[in-house]
Image (tube, rainbow, N blue to C red; front, side, top):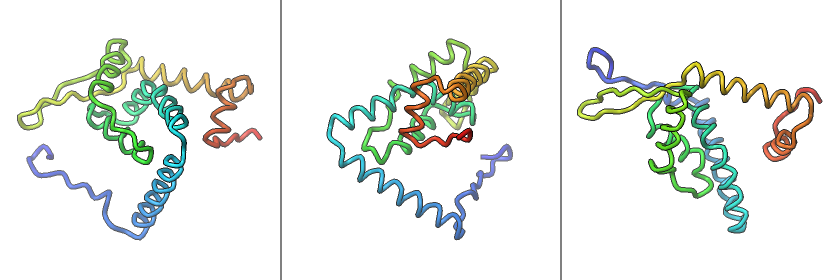
Length: 166
């Protein structure tokens, strides 16, 4: 609701030819990912899930850097992004300890707000959090520039990261 009590209206999903094409393309891509994932052995699925979990903390910090949000929003985004892989939405027991750890280390800051009868804690990135992400990016760019990182080679090969220097 807006400050005057009127409902917020989100027009971002209005039907237009462009939005319909984008949605069709997204659905087609998700179906292809699901088929590929389902064709994997159980061990291959375990490897993929492990890779996704390993970057969770940094990804949560990055998500909060994009937009101030609460824990349930973060859980939902993870669920939407992993839906093709038949993985469960990360539970509160997984997300909130990460949020508390990031907050304890001053990378994010939480503030409570009332939404009707409920209190919701919103998280936003701190200056220290922005600086941490900046250092992570610099490390990645340095490794890429110097072609000195096995991780850079791995990610280029695995997710087809474009290298503008080649």
